[in-house]
Length: 351
Ligand code: NAD
Ligand code: TYD
Image (tube, rainbow, N blue to C red; front, side):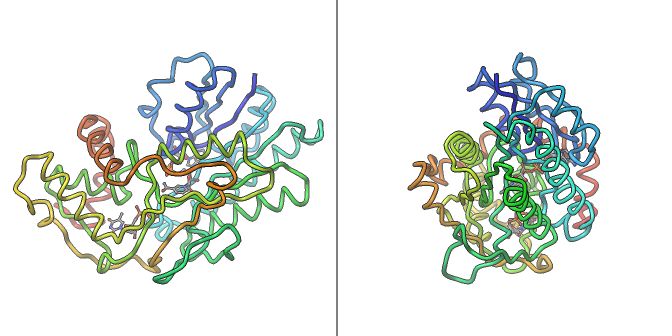
């Protein structure tokens, strides 16, 4: 049996990955270490919580004593590291949390992996670090991020992720720790916390609340359906080359304003509202400080080496996503009835 430590498995992407691995690989034991911050939600994992090859541990990746105990108690062979503070806006108001979890937490895991695995010469071991395209900075109208694009992070979030990527490579180079890093574009889909653009806007449309678009809405993101990301991680985990980096992206660029118009039109149909009703909720607000203009990933390497490409067209993915939020109102209600709605409403002066 392989013992895989997945960190951040109660979050958005982590929960899709945990569900995929627990169900697909019954010969693996999946140990999910998650602090359950505001973004972690055990409701995401209901379908696997009682399965015998799944273990949940509530805890902090920065807790050296706990991390050491987990490596010993469960004879961890591999780490897939997703735990992070992940929202750019929060990184602007609270950068220290990002340095702590994203940098110090990653370092804590790397160092324990080095200590535990050096004993048998790192045989069959892997530290797989999940990162973001945001480490490459911001693009102009043309061009794509490639694996060798120089790092140029521009927000406290991306700076903390870039720093963690550097530590991962440094541990590979200095201590021979077997590592892989993937840098993925913006994900969307079920179970995403409603502070991120797509679930936030779906929820606000359902509740007739304003849709705050930063600046002129012309910033561009490359969107990937979360389950396609999980499939890519599965492939890279099993077939990726050690000490390599792979970019993962959707080849699916949208300006925020065009994306929102698609969501508004789809929601109008689903809610039997007159065409144009949801678009009236669009409100242009002050731009995000240092707002990156454009992200676009070239994932040709992953396609050519491992045969991965996104399986869903965006129109299909967004439809599935909206349907999920419609069919899981209790999931959203549990979040927005907690402290989060207060936090959000205060930010935008919503009464
Ligand atoms: P998320 O915010 O939804 O989930 C993060 C999870 O990590 C939560 O369950 C949270 O409780 C947990 N966590 C936070 N701090 C922790 C700590 N100190 N110790 C243990 N657990 C902790 O994030 P996500 O969107 O699922 O992103 C997962 C990973 O993928 C992150 O590393 C992120 O940088 C990366 N990523 C995200 C995207 C995206 O579009 N969401 C794109 C590319 C890469
Ligand atoms: P977000 O989902 O926060 O992801 P990221 O900043 O990591 O790309 O935001 C996606 C885009 O949407 C980004 O250009 C910022 C913009 N945005 C808004 O215009 N309004 C909002 O309320 C939010 C949350 C984001």
